[in-house]
Image (cartoon, rainbow, N blue to C red; front, side, top):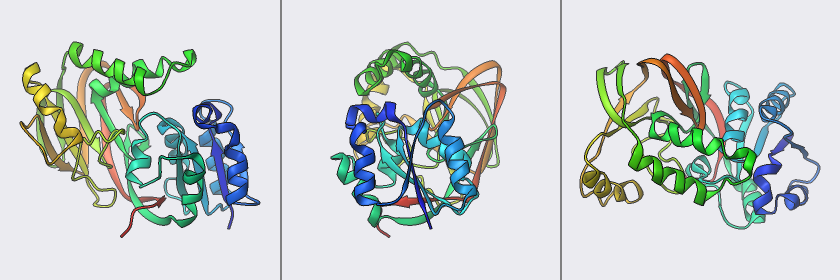
Length: 293
């Protein structure tokens, strides 16, 4: 059974991406390696690989490139693998992928096991880690706009996040779920399959890729003092000074909001008009994981 590697060369530049193919050939001799050439190319390459019966498709890139592959691998027997080359690398951290030297990231995949995970879906598109509306969608839109300038990275992302944190005006969201109906005045409304955005910012500490539920987590609108006191708990969940979130286990949800609004799937910005439908699909994708147990 063959393994196919898909590399986003734009992501790889900062971490020695030019050497990545030679490292792949060293540790996975004879495998096929493709480079993406445009947005959406990873989805096409992954679709072709799955149709040809590839056992594994390993994506080297950021969350956006990985999400493209997810769209094509959902419901297939082809397992997704990840070499993290992005800024936050949320999914890679959840899959226990190493984030050290590039060669370590490649070599470690040889010892990973294939596991079956749930997938979320938002307005017809799959997400493996997180989807949401609110401040994180606003940040994703602004960060995505930096793509053409080549100024993306951890510092620009942090800067945009900090600016948005102090300026964001929380909308009123009407949400219908299988667990009940709610109206939230929320800074963020997250549908978590995995636990974190990336950089160990844990939004849903009890989320699981394989429990058949999404953790719908609301960051409640409150005063700036309480928000600042609550922020450390996202990085250290056991050290909660105040609670600024509520979490609900759900299988499906419909968000209603008048007009056009932003949302994201796995960090990729999208827009919807009037509504956003979210649901969970248990056991929909296979993925390579370094986690034990």
